[in-house]
Length: 112
Length: 112
Image (tube, rainbow over all chains, first blue to last red; front, side, top):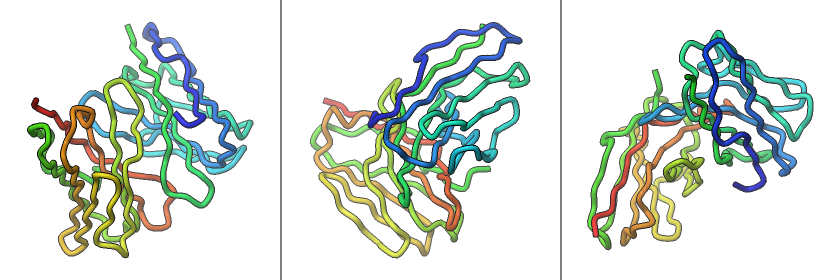
């Protein structure tokens, strides 16, 4: 996955619990992204960050939070406010000056 | 809603035949398009890209065609192999924006 590590790969959560998904990259890229994918669907943008200590909401940010304290890390927290959190979560990075996103292997979250 | 969509959600082809996967987009300001391949349980992988000032671009066994008049994008895969079985997504980059919008995806199945 080109230097992008997502963990855990599988995660189960009870309703009402917050959970944090990790995304780490060693590519020295500035921009990082979180997408959500539901079965049979495309990818929808949750949050993105173009530089350390800065991030913007994507199209479906409600119920999620992020931080970007370090260049190599962009963790995503799925809060209890997210009504339907069961999904496949994908982290991506974009090379400086490039348009192509490189994706991690994904984290599959299941709410029991 | 999403500005990128696909004409067909599924496509079955015989091994060795050529495959054509289509994508429609609605945003005239999109300046860059990408095709991704996603195998089951994995993150999307970059296949090929094309800028809006181009009509055609070729890679290894793949060709992307862009028709800006009708806002249509296609991915052609030559001599389809079993390893080509996957879901294929097109994505567009809105001009000036730093995020990609993805289509729903087409599942390509290869028949022996």
